[in-house]
Length: 297
Image (cartoon, helix red, strand yellow):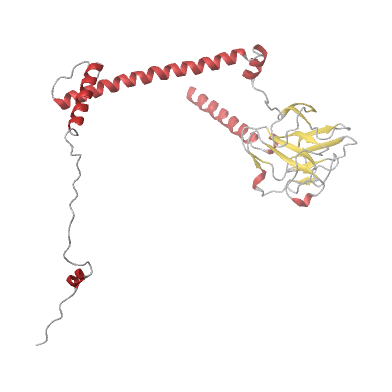
């Protein structure tokens, strides 16, 4: 009996989780996130035009295909613009944004709406499900918006609507443009003295460590060379090898100089020139280069 109850409870939980996950994947997770009515120097569309735009946001934890849903600016006509089905780009990833251009030219592609926004009056914008009856999200933009200043949610997919300090088309409304550590340095070390001392100390410590490392490597190399020389000679090498006094080197240099100087003490300084007489003319010597004419038989 207890096992049946546990099994039924697990089945109920599984069905609840499945239904929750399925609901998260539906287009109901899409939210109106940001709107820019007057686009003068903001983002341009794929035709190079500065048009008003509407941003949608996927608030679910899974991908959502919003193809077949409707976007409208008329409460009496919820099916004013139908997002085409079959476009692979309508499959949006979780917590991502997509921009639709309110340029009134719906035949330019999936993301070009067939209506425009009038900044001189209030603009109603709504998103409906594929049945054209189920309202997913809606917002009314007040009249008198400023050019290149968007109107959106304080937090992506939720929060209150209002004028945003920074326009972020196809991006999250909340952006972190500052570094907390840098800001703290600016507050507590306005003159940069601490960062200068820290940097210099880091450099000097690094140089000192390099000195110690290379010194140890040099000592290890000297010891290794002595061991190799001892093995090659087959006998012990004095501990102070290579550290002889200057007198020894001076004596060796003097002996080498004397040896080199003795080789030149008995050089001949008399040059003898003997004249060679020739008994024939240089022209007559050419006869030695002639070939003998063979005798005819």
